[in-house]
Amino acid sequence: MATILRKIAEQVLSRTTFSNVAMDRAKDAVVDTIGCMIAGSGDESVAALTRAFDGEIAEGGAARLVTGGSASPSFAALINATAAHALDFDDNFHPARAHASAVLVPALLAVLARGKATSGRRFLEAYLAGLEAQAAVGFGVNPSHYNRGWHATATVGSIGAAAGVARLLGADEESLVAAMSLATSFACGPKGQFGTSAKPLHAGIAARNAVDATRMALAGMSGRPDILERPQGFLDLFGGDDAKGWEDLTFGEEHIIESRGVVTKRHPCCASTHRAIDALLDLKQEHGLLADDIARIETKVGISAARNLAYPEPTDEMQARFSMQYCLATALLKGSLSLSDFTRQEIGRAEIREFMPRIEMQSYSADEEKGVERLPHVVTVTMRDGRILNKSRLHAKGSLEAPMSVHEREAKFMDCLRWGNRNVFGASFLQLRRLADSENLSGDDHFWSLIADC
Image (cartoon, rainbow, N blue to C red; front, side, top):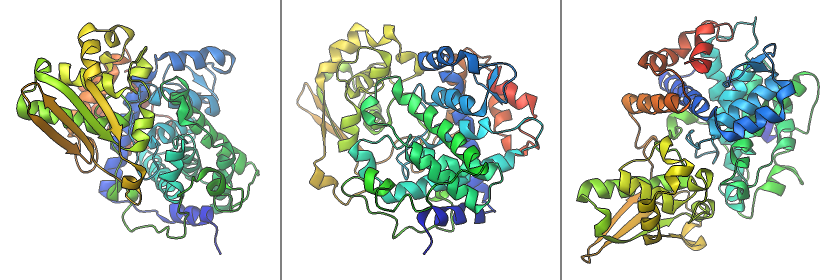
């Protein structure tokens, strides 16, 4: 009987044709992630890595950095992926419960070899392979794995991204299986780190692990092909109490990006806040809500979301991204959330701090969540005049069910460029969206100048 890793490898290597929809969505995800990399390039988490590994970074490195200069593929993946996830503005991928693109895109960029032509289309196909592998790995362990406290970006993301990197580097089935098996041995990342700079570091470590595992596999290193399902393997150790395993794993004719999509973030904060933010903004628009007229706001969210949002009174900008109270208060008072709302100065604003105690959060019970993949997040606003207003959101803005327009994507990209202190011009967004037309990404100086010198 074929092992799970072998089934995944057979699938991602045999899928050689992709629909225009799949390619377009992959392109959108890559461009969005590059924008997030640029925005996060100046974050302190990235600066700390640069200081820590200063000797590993030089102009002569094989892979290029969003911060400028170059490094080994391993360190480029680490730094660029940390930058992509530093501001929590990068996309979510529900089948893996992971920030899939923040791991995948930097890992793939890191192994683009100068002097060896790699087309934009081949790059996107490798992205789609890695995404499908992440979904397949996540299928067997989530949501139990995530609810138990594992940051799936660092675990499932690392294993699945290794498949994408392996495909880009031309690995055969044996090497691709070995890459995923080795990446399983690297997998780690507790969600207890949320609200600290270790959280974006998880994406960096996962991207580096995917690159390192694949390079080791291609050099002859191997691991057990049944490491996901065997005793003392991934499912056994990481699955949690309710993980179902892969017995019912199937692959549809449609790629997972067509059937499920990735969720492009509208707000630069933890995705656990997004549906509540969207619901509150819906109510604000529908009823013209004013802060002075509101007595109380109550939110009901999933158990894992409530655990993620551990900072009712945040003391820095990272904690604020994981604070339902701060995010809702800011969204209500300002009408939106942007990168500029997550600075030390902004999080201390008196009007926001005064409103935050009116916001309460509770979670569904374990019985309510049992057997249900997804429940809506609900916002209840009690007005001072006694009226009670309710709104629920099953899907956040940016999801397949509530997609962002091209204009909204471009506006987000420009916000990222401004935050990253890059030149802002609309052509950069449109040029990156023509990614698939490039015949040689590794040698395309124009492509790299858009990333490093926009």
